[in-house]
Length: 145
Image 1 (cartoon, rainbow, N blue to C red):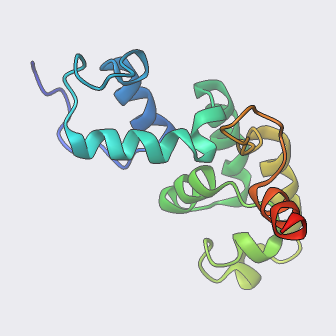
Image 2: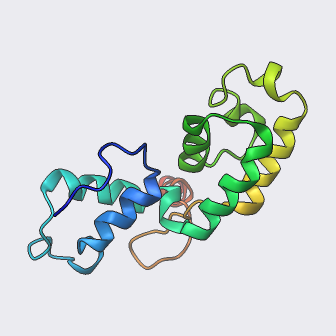
Image 3: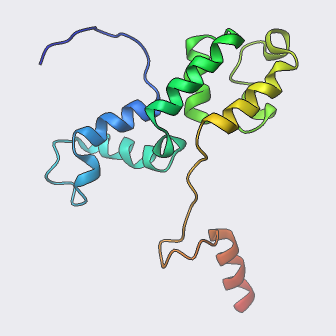
């Protein structure tokens, strides 16, 4: 193994997930065959339930290109990709001095996030995939009691 660029920058959650998949994480349900450390399995499990699981290289590249007009810092772009905010309230803490730098453009940025980056994963019940939220299911169980 040869290191081409040491510490060439921060990675998005998608890039980390893609790396773990390339090492065999997605193909080894037993977690025995793939050469992945237990801590890496925990990261893989977390990222599989985050917005990173639905993202693609193309969507991230497109978003990064469209963000250039907002003059955001690299860290801010990476955080937006990792969090995928869907409202101004969620994006405000990500961008330093958001009101001063962005003004009304923040709403356009949120709209672009919603259009370019894929939706977060939906949570399905593990017992049959009914699509009901766990809260709805718990409420029904409490009513039945």
